[in-house]
Amino acid sequence: MPPYTIVYFPTRGRCEALRMLLADQDQSWKEEVVTKESWLQGPLKASCVSDGAQTGGATLEEGAAELSVPHRAVPHPSQLYGQLPKFQDGDLTLYQSNAILRHLGRSFGLYGTDEREAALVDMVNDGLEDLRRRCSHLIHHKREEDKAQYVRELPAHLKPFETLLSQNQGGQAFIVGNQISFADYNLLDLLLNHQVLVPGCLDPFPLLSAYVARLSARPKLKAFLASPEHVNRPIFGSRKI
Ligand code: GTS
Image 1 (cartoon, rainbow, N blue to C red):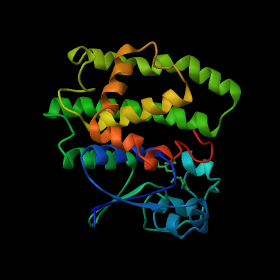
Image 2: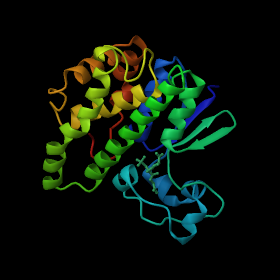
Image 3: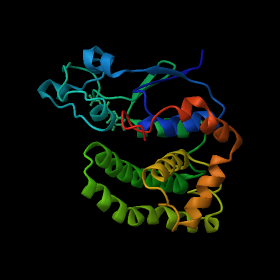
């Protein structure tokens, strides 16, 4: 039995970076896929809802919006957040995708080689979260003019990552230091998604383009990215991108 279980909607969403990390680190894991129907029944959400949800505090965003999950689903006290992903590592249960990434980063030595690098890895990952939120807002509240604005502003949001790469060994290595970190998997996931969402968006960024090609060619990642498991899983819910 693999020690890891990912409980999530049938999308890449906030879990594909985790999956890429696990695959590249030669780990296996179990998937528990949560359908819209089972989520709407409520007990699973209730089993991960915070006290705040007693007043309707659970938010609805991203995949849930895609899945048309209603706001303020059944609240339940003394539980956590009311959202997926949920992640099991043996008897440790975690919520919050970035906490899970960091946990795996610590477990597999993917958190820089010292405190300075760890701080930089955190900085990159927090920057990625900013972009991920913008992107998911666009997907779930999409209007044509919003997409046009998103596309116009995207270069400014990608540029920091090109700059960070250029500052680390001329862009020939990883986003921080000399070894892969959890932030690399997160960055790779967002860049791959953006190549689908905004084709050609990496063209002005030669280092990021080469980085995507280089990381995607790592043998275990390459195999994962070519697997039906990855290929057939939509980036976001029902929009099939
Ligand atoms: N900060 C959380 C994280 O990083 O894990 C956000 C999790 C989140 O927004 N989960 C959404 C959810 O469970 C699904 S998705 O956005 O990841 O696709 N929504 C269901 C609900 O009822 O809110």
